[in-house]
Image (cartoon, rainbow, N blue to C red; front, top):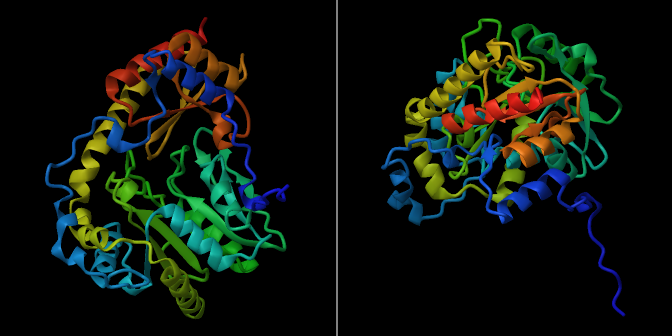
Length: 391
């Protein structure tokens, strides 16, 4: 009898579908129409795209392979110009191109952590962090965000330990929609400098603010006292998840920054994951950022405005006001557990939403809705949610 196959502990996940996934599959199998208020893929919600959008992918230069660990110079110059557009001047030589922000995280975790080290991530926050870190043999520990009507990061809640290597901040948060404020940035940078930690700033939704606010930190990409890695990508900034290109901006003290770039060059050269056609197309795509973002901004603002108006009446639910991003968070009565409520909405109302515990909300009860949902579907889904809350 052959020996039992051994697999990495990093991939020891419970792969059984959870109850909500099982219920959704049953609905699909039965052919029922479900109003899906969880869809966050901008290519599946009826948003218009220019017919000629992807023509730059046919650039004849894509027939030739010129391996460049950090990416082609012209592409990095275009990304640097996009940072400048956001008010953050950046040298293209500080940029490392990757195939996705997930890969960007993986590169940074490889650079900073040995197996058994840990990173600090925000709670509530996106659940992908744990998977990305685990695949690198790295632990994740959450730090709480405070909610007093809006979300806040209190640097005193960051409690690094001996094997803590970095702090992840997300601005605006997903799904909270809260931007990092200047005073919060300064406090986090001060703590990171005193503890010898790096900062990882996820700014993929940075362009999608619902209103201006001078209190916000435009970016963490600056040369202060802390080694900082700022992440972005076409998936969100241009609403193009099918065009795989992301980036890491490396800033901070000169000596550390140089060491980081030298080591990242070896990591990037080992993978060489970004395709030449995508790199050649990127400058033209980034030049059209406003045109590409406009349908997303219009959709999210329309749905958010309708949601605010609907909740302004006598409602059993309230909105946790987002500052930006693509999600809305509803606070609902905790008369049922979040799982029971979401299952009941799916079974009785044919509405699919996400429970707050998917994102590690500190307590119940919250529902997370995608603001990318087609407006008619979104409005009808909200009506069904509110009617269920009063039954």
